[in-house]
Amino acid sequence: MLRKLLKAAAVCLIASSMFTISAQADALKGQKIIIKKLKKDCGFTGAVLAKKHTQDEWKAKFESKTLNDEILKICPKAKPLKNSYLPHVYDFLYNYASDSGNVPSC
Image (tube, helix red, strand yellow):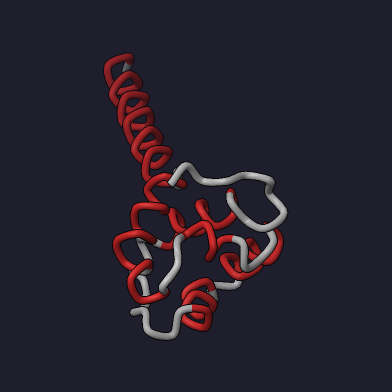
C-alpha cells in the first residue's frame, strides 16, 4: 500500500514539474524568436514592435488569440509565427510594451 502511494506521489511530482517548466514563457526566448523570424521582414527591432501597444493591449491580443494577426498587421511581410512561439513572443512584447518602462538590452 505504501509502495503504491509513493509511486503515485512520484508520478504526480514528475508530471507537475514537467507542466510547470513547459507552461513558463520566456521573454529572452521571445526576443530571440523576434530577431530570427520577424526583424528582417518588419524592418525594425523587437523593442520597436513592443512599443506599438500597451501591456493591456498586448494582453488582450494574446488572450483573444489574435496576437499573430496583430503582428502580421504591423509587419505584413512576415510569416505567421508557430503557436509554440507565441507565449514567448507575448512575454517579450508585454514586458517591453510602451507603458512598461522597460527597455530590452539589444
